[in-house]
Amino acid sequence: MSLKLLADLHISPKTVVALRLSGYAIERVTDYLPAIATDCQIIALAERLQASILTQDLDFSALIARSGMSAPSVVSLRVRDASPRYVTALLLRGLLLPEWVILA
Image 1 (spheres, rainbow, N blue to C red):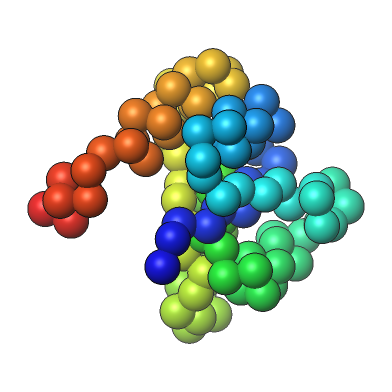
Image 2: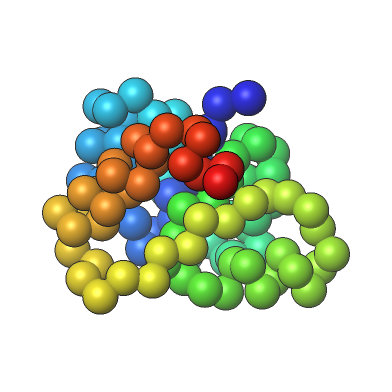
């Protein structure tokens, strides 16, 4: 199964475009929902799309854990620099790691 990502509003459109150009299956929440969508609506969308949520908002993990849901997965970023340039570089470095490094 390939990695599918759903980027929430805290992830820049520039980052989404860069990841797409690098071959990743990534959509933005605003491709499907209004910018005022609730976290619960975003979780439901990610579940429907069978995508992991890519976010800088720490609420998603807590919401999913409290609900007892097993999906979707959440990729939470806590970074010192939230600029699109930094986040994009960080993600591309992390996502391009060989699978054996990630699983180790």
